[in-house]
Image (cartoon, rainbow over all chains, first blue to last red; front, side):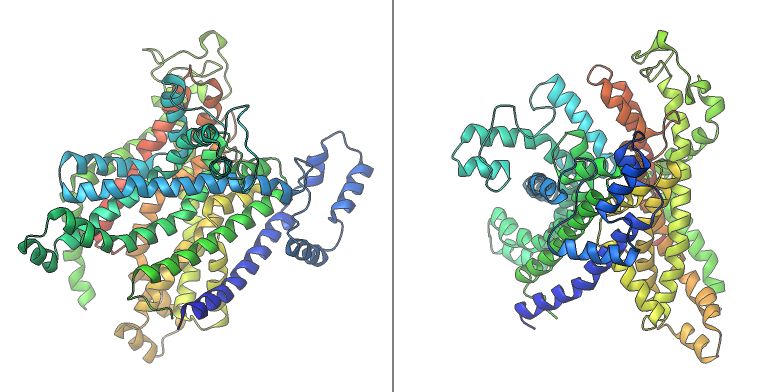
Length: 336
Length: 288
């Protein structure tokens, strides 16, 4: 089967899953006990005010009708009004989604930038101190609570040493026109170097906190697959021919370990989105995860529904992209 | 017949392999230590009354010292005592989540794997697809939106997000085992489906499920502490590691011990369960 056919088939397969997700989230939001209206209006509200607000939000209608309205609104990209910010949830999200994507994207980049060299070095210098410290970092990288790592980095690198900003996405007074919503990209597009550096400087700690377990996993995986490849007979042949070791490592061993690394990075997307909830809260990062966490505590149903759906959708798309790239990198994979 | 004769040797091999790995002993020691400390917290803790809502403003925010090994919090409670007591909700959390997730995941996985083409089997697999489409923390958070934030809510929410992973694991194993001659024989003999599932198939999925459950414990602890860090979980004054870190953040950077001590407790516990799970996997020789 060709690439286009594969894409279409996978897309069609994803539709029932996504529809199921819509139903599930709707059920969570509407069928569970608890009165969001009472919470949104506070204890001072009169019964009449509550009834009026309930009618305004359509929560007085029968459940199936509510579901129909919900689907109709979603198809227009309308998630309703946030009970907490009293703004349109879609508008809130439009500002927040780029911030989260920028954070998760940077974390993915860091996973490769740090994980790949660490894995290569531990494979080449197997059982050396480099290998041992990479292994130690890998074990603790997975076991450290994400929010706590963030706090430790804040204490030592930001407060004590003053190397990085403690929280936030940019310094006050640094502003660039918003085109994409990605601070780094916007600053580059505007040719504003100080703003770009400011954005990167603010990204560094949260992105590293988020990336830590993925860095560790990438390093372990690259190490394992490189050691396996380096033990293959054809590598020995190249070595016997007198090919420089550097060339063998990069030309053969590394390339063969890239496919599995790619899969791992794709699979870690879910973990990154998940841990973004904690990292964004710790670093006051204005993304959808911090927004979602606040919405849950405020019982802001529309916002919770929107955040969960957006994350689910991002997750589906990420898996699809990984499948595609996997086939491109490894010619043995057939799309069927 | 083979089963009967191979059992003692495989058990001996399991014990030998498990003991050969020095890290597994470290894991056993850490986990054992956490369990003992949790069980005997009221007798071990130097200030057991601080596990509640007691207030001693005269000794608030003291750094670690000989009287208060882990320092004191913003109302003067002994953090060491609170960290000990907080091991209780953490372990209860693990037990309840595993019980619920396995309780739903294993039977659904058995049914879906034994009769993958039946209507029920298809529905089960479809539903797991939906659940697996959202990362567990996001799903658990969404689940709690309408509920009172407390420990029970957090436990149910995490189980709600976690069971499909067991369904999938058991489903995969059952698909494989179903084709084995001993199952075919049982079918040919006309045994009832429920009997085949329980007596012939279930015993063969126990070890992969056990290994996954052990390895999952660390994730469940991390997930639970994340939820309570975000405000969903045990509420003040009940001691809880995640919640203690969240409150301690307000007193940074000066009072670093408020966040560091409970954070370390999570870290050590998770490492312990990780080592135990790895050792168990290697000893049982289950492929990941």
